[in-house]
Image (cartoon, rainbow, N blue to C red; front, side, top):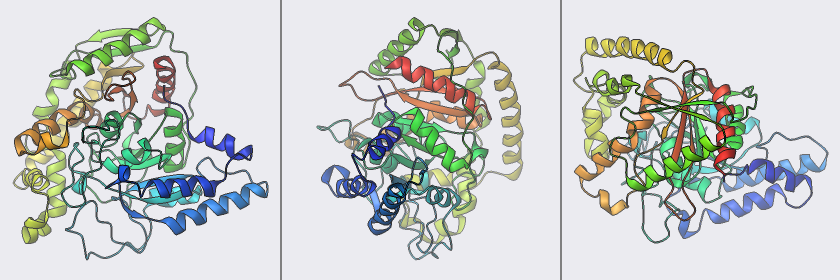
Length: 444
């Protein structure tokens, strides 16, 4: 069962059984171990320890601290930090102008007193769900000590930092699943909020239509702590019992090609929820089959990434991850008319999906249909792109909906992690959070 880490740490601190400085020191030491290789691209040891000591002094003086104050938090190498160049997992941006100020998300974490321990590795320009980075190495999924498996992407280092206990929260981003995919594959919780909840100012863009600033942690409650800080306003969550909740399971798309372990884990989770009183309703939801067709002219991410990278990729293609460059190329020749048509068709699709989901408390499906492949199994482009497509398929549908979504661990002890995805329509974050809390408790 996932358990809240932040509240447990605060209880230890309040009882005098720990110090913020000791917690952050342990995280920084862990970041240098072989198990954390390639997780961080930069450590902020001095600043993190200063934040921890400040929290210790404030607590000693009787100051009531925010939940994240003095606790280790990691931030994806997608976000501006004042005075340094935002690399976004690339070598292309070496030499680019340093950021003039922290991005909004980092400003808000600092305002909460978070001890930002470092920047985490990622897929170059956040453009895949696999998590492989040829420039800075690939963080190894900590779920399998014997086989080097992918962590999922694009927020690869963020997920591994949380899974290893090096951060209580990993700030990432989610354009097509970049929070929920690595959360599912690494056995933690990821929350993709409605896009408009947190400003994207100071985040290097992939797709302005789909990019979402959000985070992952060890439990739903911890994700809500992170979301409250990032959005600068907590969700007003009214806890609900699982009894009577209506959860829709779609037969279209989401189970195509699912592997046996993932299917078994999903069915086991559904059986637990049903036994606890949830109403599991099988629906067709044929609209899901339309996503690929609407996105077919090139896809929002390739088209909008092409606008960002047009000049740099023309001048220095060899510096790009070839697999990222290939996806950017898909958007280079799409016409303005096709792009505008995509926007209109998406808006119509969203309206129909919102209508189809009325009366349900959440849409329920596997976060990803496959367990984490071995890194070496994706050495060829064919194998890589096949896995990438499978990993992104389910999560992307919710980004396309501009919905909100949680991924919760649902695997048995000792098995490779997989995720149970709970999703709803845009703006339904608070109600979905109540559902996620109830489901999380039942899965224990």
